[in-house]
Image (tube, rainbow, N blue to C red; front, side, top):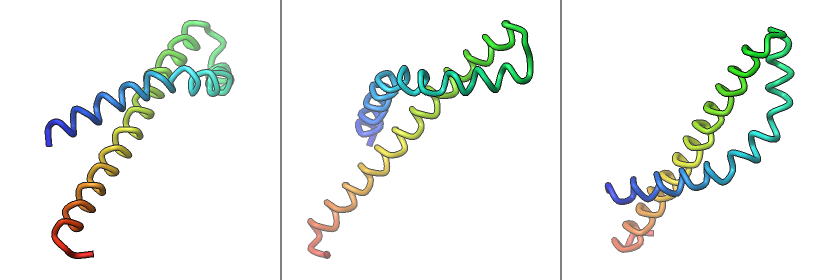
Length: 87
């Protein structure tokens, strides 16, 4: 079970690394417009953008790892049921 956890961890990190720039680029203007509503200070806006980058990375990683874990669990259950003769 530990090796499956490692596999999902590695795949989730790779997918997060690959998709983060695209997702960040698509949401950058939206986050910037929301941040500028609350403050005109560039320090505040920079902090919000950095926080959004970290939050987006965690969101992508969590979603991918959860989906992979669920898929591997379903695959394992399917194999067990198939080998036991029950369909």
